[in-house]
Length: 169
Image (cartoon, rainbow, N blue to C red; front, side):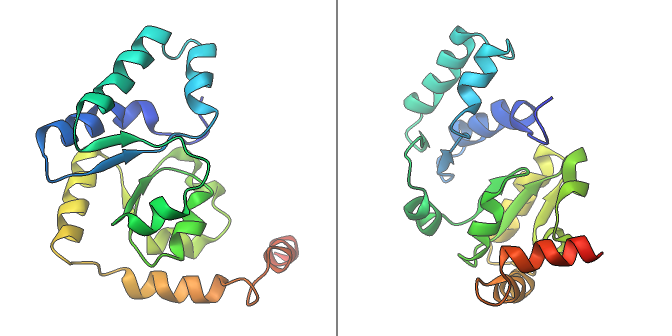
């Protein structure tokens, strides 16, 4: 159980997509503990992981980002493809689209209107279709994302106020 992660659902399809389409620049940014965890728990062998990461090294339009600071990555990207992650909230402030890979953990998202601002997908085909739509400049959720970002802007809504609202509910 990976707590809502779709890593094993899409990992091979994502790298294959980039290998087959040089117009896609793919940056893979695993959680800092994820890769080690997959080996320690037997989800991947060290050799499987090494071979997988080697594909990223060989592909000229991909990279594995394990740097500590991710803000430069956020601002140089065009969109974020992710599953359940605290990074979604931070990425929201870039104004850029988020393609969200749905999982059974979706009901744990504490801000219900957040899912309405994301492009929620349930298959790899939907990921590709959504990215193609965004590449054409079609981003119908942009205004909704911007409104939510303004609403949640620090100072307007602090973590304490959000927690208090949840407790009151």
